[in-house]
Image 1 (cartoon, protein in one colour):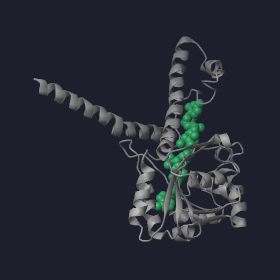
Image 2: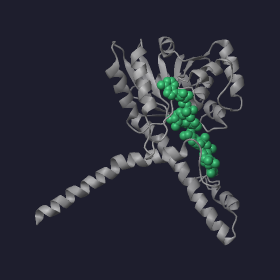
Image 3: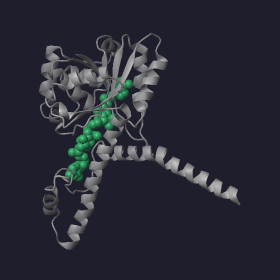
Image 4: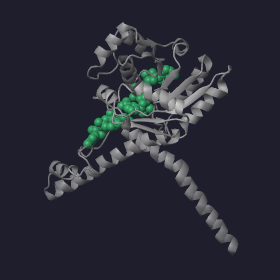
Length: 298
Ligand SMILES: NC(=O)c1ccc[n+]([C@@H]2O[C@H](COP(=O)([O-])OP(=O)(O)OC[C@H]3O[C@@H](n4cnc5c(N)ncnc54)[C@H](O)[C@@H]3O)[C@@H](O)[C@H]2O)c1
Ligand SMILES: O=c1ccn([C@@H]2O[C@H](COP(=O)(O)OP(=O)(O)O[C@H]3O[C@H](CO)[C@@H](O)[C@H](O)[C@H]3O)[C@@H](O)[C@H]2O)c(=O)[nH]1
C-alpha cells in the first residue's frame, strides 16, 4: 500500500518505518526541514532499539521516503496518517493547532480520494472536525473518509510495540475503511481477535481512557508505597502479591517517584478537560434549571 505519515516525530517515524518494513511505500512528511535533511542522511532524532537499521535499509530500498513536500507525498498515496504533536495548553486543555494546520494543508494540495487516519492523541470529536476543515477548504470534488487509529507504543520499546501490538483500535464509519486498515495492519497481527473495530468517537476516547487508567494504577500504588514505608512493609512484595490476581496484573503497579513520560501527564489533563467541557457544564446547567424551577414556585 502507499501511505503518507504527516509528522515524523516519535510516533510518525516509528510507525512509518514499521509500515515500510512490512512492504508498504511510505512517505514521511515533516515541516522541520533540518529533521528531514538529517533523516535523509540516516541521522535520527531519537534512539529506539533497531530503529536506525530499519530506517537505513528501508530508505535504501526506496520504501521509506523523507520529504517536506506534502503535495509530492499526497500525489503518490491515498492513505494519510496525521501523527503531529498534541501538547497541552497552560490550562491543561489540548493544543490542536498542529492537527488543524495539517488539515488545511491537506485541503490545499490533495488530488485524489483519500482516507485520513488520525493517529495523534486527540479529544473526542476531533476527527470529525478535521474532516470538516478539509472538506470546507477543498476546491475540487474529492471524497474524504476519516478514521481514528490511536497509538499505544511506549518509548524505549517502540518498535516492538508497533510490530507486536496488544491490539489495534480502528474507529471508522464504513466497512471499506475497516477492511483497508485491517489489511494494512495484517502483517503485524496474525490473530484477528486483536483488531478492535468501533465508531470514531469511541476510538478517540479509548486512547485517553487507557492512559488515565494506567496512570491511576501507578498513582494508587505510589500511595500504597508511602503507607508501606510507614508500617515497615515492602511495596515490591505487595506488588507481587496483588499482581498475581489476573484482574489486577503485574504491569503498571511499580511504585516510583510519580509518573511522567511524554503522554500520561498531558493525556490525563486532556481527559479531565473533556469532562469539564461536557459533563461538568451539563451538571451546572441542570442545577441552574432546577434552582430556577424551585424559585418559580415561590
Ligand atoms: N511519543 C509517544 O510515546 C506517543 C505514543 C502514543 C501516542 N502519542 C501521540 O502521538 C502524537 C505525536 O506524538 P510524538 O511524540 O510523535 O510528537 P513529536 O513532537 O515527536 O512529533 C511531531 C512531529 O510533527 C511535526 N509537525 C508539526 N506540524 C507539522 C506540519 N504542519 N506538517 C508536518 N509536520 C509537522 C513536528 O515537526 C514533529 O516532528 C501526539 O498526539 C502524542 O500524544 C505519542
Ligand atoms: O509501573 C509503572 C509503569 C510506569 N511508570 C511511569 O509511568 C511513566 C510512563 O511510562 P511508560 O508507559 O513506560 O512510557 P510512555 O512512553 O510514556 O508510554 C505511555 O504513554 C504513551 C503515550 O500515550 C502510550 O502510547 C503508552 O501506551 C503508555 O504506556 C514513566 O514516568 C514511568 O516511570 C511507573 O511509575 N510505574
